[in-house]
Length: 267
View 1 (cartoon, rainbow, N blue to C red):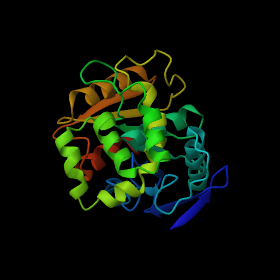
View 2: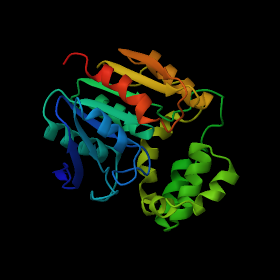
View 3: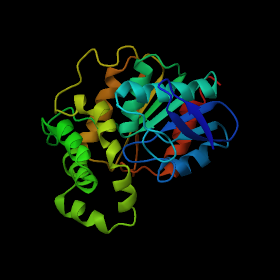
View 4: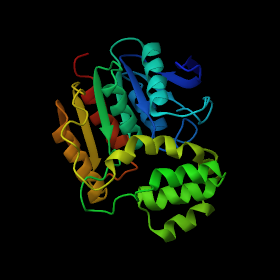
């Protein structure tokens, strides 16, 4: 394990594996190296790339200097990009895709960008998040109600049925989810502006001009697939790809070949 120091002094823990062009994988909400779908993906990509996985601030072995602001997460990623050196490729999944987008928009230097199902809501194919969604998450976390924060996120953010959310407390991973519940508002800060059921503003991410691949799963819900397709149409240099048979929890065996092919261009 390695560590980099972010601009505000926060220690960010990472793992490096493989050899080749640098690729950084950005996890979504409540994920980190100890519980991430990116773990097996990193192994698959490490045959051709130097792959960096890391614990976003507040999770795993990384620090969590207060107060939080979205800019701190971007600085964390910038520090890791600097550690990796030039020619970095960036991949983000779910809300991690929104973090990756924001980082590139802010000027973090990357060669290519790949995104899988950022959880934006750009039409009426599902209800938008409540107007007080971010505030309510902040309140639950401030009150120490970790379990309620996870439930609220799963119901109002992810849109899972109530019966499924009620059963989650019996899952082996429930305690791990509660342990990082305080970071749910961090992810919300990146996605909430685009979860109100309206099209992206035309000027969104106009400065993201690097070659970008936006992906979705063929078995994913309509709303998130529509958001991915619309994002690819909006970005200046983007293409869209559907991974048939996949859901939001994409299988590394289906994703890795597509991702590797895109990220290897220009090497």
